[in-house]
Image (cartoon, rainbow over all chains, first blue to last red; front, side):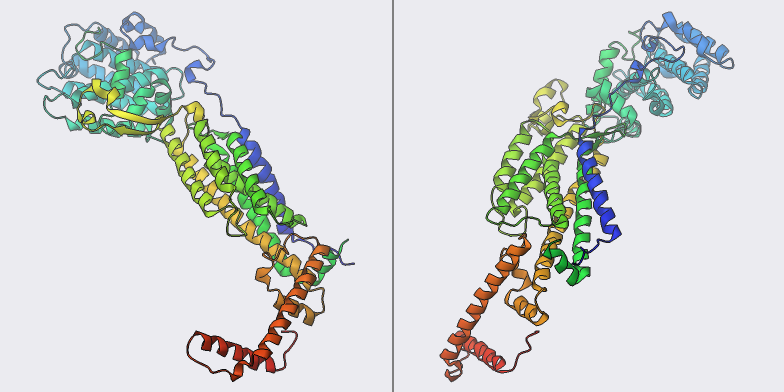
Length: 267
Length: 329
């Protein structure tokens, strides 16, 4: 009696491999998605700045001195001087007017230096920018002076380009960087809609470019875009709007900072 | 050891090995397709499963389709390659069907009902596991699944948002709630999307690749199983002396074996079935030859019309029949 024809080794191997993949294809369907642990809810390691969002709110002046211990020795004198000037600023000057003065130039140098430092220093730079937004006037007004809002937007844009990607999974920076994005959306939307008739296209196009870069496409969010969608879904949804992609950002900004509209009312 | 092994040893080995190889390859394609259809990628590049619900419903559709297709035939896989091929084809159909269902909610059940109705209809093409109507419906459902997943990935929780003419043209924010109509609202929970949101481009690639692999794998496995069954019949016929086997193969051409019910039969029944078929066809041949001789077609006139053409063809048959034949063919 003849024996059964022997299958080639390759065929047998492919059959075994296919069987293993079949089993795996069934088991993998039960794989559960990873739990979503937001960075700010993760266990803390080492000392950190407590409640960082308070330092972006109206009462920032009450705690801003706490940041001194997080600033490097080289930047510390400048930081102290600039925060002293900025938090003592009164009379609500126009943003551009103040920035182009001596104190403003010092502020710009300090912000640029802090932005390239540690995460705590970057956060301190953002605190300064928010205080600038509170203490100076950048509302375009009836005459449509958009340069102030655009300058504020440029400061926020620089900070977001540097830190948005890194902040997505950073317990300290994720909230502040999203706040920076919301304020950026508000400032540039004001500039975009400033003319009584028609729109000022420049700020809107700049905003579109930045938002595409840091949040990703509408269906392929970057981690920062996902952080935005998780915390401010309406703002994230609005980014896909053809008509007004900044509307959602402004609405969310109005919830967090209702009086921060560029007329010093929030100071 | 049964007779089939002895038979297999005598026949040409390369063709059988080609069928087995194709079954293995098709099964691997189906398995890889099932794997791709079973995962989704979230925004953090994490993988998670698509759940068992859609696959379970797909398996029911595949089972119904298999039963309907097998109704009236007594054929079953009789050896390991045949059984493995049948299993792979079943899983391929279950994976592909489960892969086209919406991930949850009432849509999934409506789609299941529609596919089940189509699966209950026996396909006209005998060797196909699923009819053309069901196939096209599956493609449409797959596109629908991709669309709602795309909408979900953009946080648009409706199938379609239709702007109302005139109202939607007015640039007033307070009109926003009444400027559009949302059709087919759903929730992320219904879609089974991961908490971090789905990464649509990567997931689209995985699912499309998986669906294509499953469909192609089922096709390859079907062809290979058919070829493998033909090999089994060929083995049995070639246990006969060579000239006799040639005659039997002329009486029972290979492309009719599946339709004649020779696939999936045990060897003993297969022998009896071939014997009966040969007897029946030989008898028919003899009856035809006798009728042909009685007709004396050569005496009839040859016209250029339809009857003339038929007479001419039969006259050629008569001339070739007069020559001595080589039984081995």
